[in-house]
Length: 452
Image (cartoon, rainbow, N blue to C red):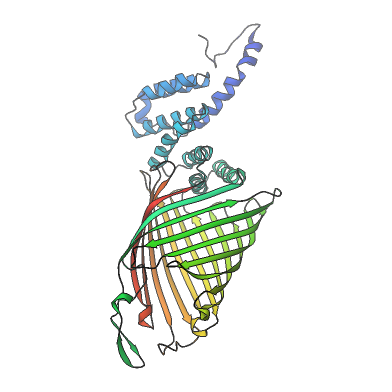
């Protein structure tokens, strides 16, 4: 049998070369994809099956190449990774993305430091409609010194922005908490110099609840640089009676402008409605602005601001304008390690000066992808708030300091019908000049989430 790359001579050589040039192109593509991992010295004597599979693929005999790889039993880590990569590449060539997915997930779990594996996984996830997970891997793959890999990851991210007008998310979790209502542990407080006992029902108590988060967004493109965005989202926390149920609905209409491939700005209108324990709590319109850019291939700078004009159903003293501004910066040290930091400023101008305050918050954090698929994120924050005037009821000026820590765990290879498991552990401790506002709480969220 004549091999595809065998030199052919004679009067029919031009015809044979014309007929076989597609195989030559295919061979070059597959060789470039499969040759990511150089054969380790320990693999040399066992590399024949892998080389044979490459030859079969170059001839266009993809199923035979896949069978050869499946029959191969490499006895070194490098060989096992070559086998996974070769099978994944060939399966993708055959259009069998769903079968390639677990092989690429296993590769990224074994070698989270190889951007090309992440890019291929992102492309496969995007083809299967799992865009949220695809975006994560594309963003992590940007932290590479290879310009070709960065360009391919950026192309994958860009494709996600234009693939469809409709998107959505859904998350369901349970929330055990030691103090979900954020109540004080103090038994007595001083009022006008006299001690008063706090009712046990108003003190700290553990609670158990559930949380549902869902939303849908429609973002039609008006031109290459302009999109509209219409969204509706909801967030509901329902507890067992030891904390208040809290439900919020929010709608938005925004314009998103793409100034360059690396920069976007947006602005829009919002309307929110909130209920506490089934009764109306607050409602009102708002404004939002946002800006995001990538100063370097490894960094991301984002600014967002929200201003809400809220009316409260049964507490008119709280009516007023609330503004929040956030500046966030992220840097990818490597495909495995991402660091981030943020500054937040908050201002509430309530009708009552004793309910008006200014707050500042500083946050730092990072995410690390371990070999094996485990991804861990840790965020730390410090917040300080000072109110405008003395509380008439407590007879003192309220000043708060709050510390928070959040640990998030996920696994790149664990999924259930497209839903990714989520585990989040959060600790919050506030110290206030008015003891009734001091509290500490340890809570967890355990559930499933998915973006559509």
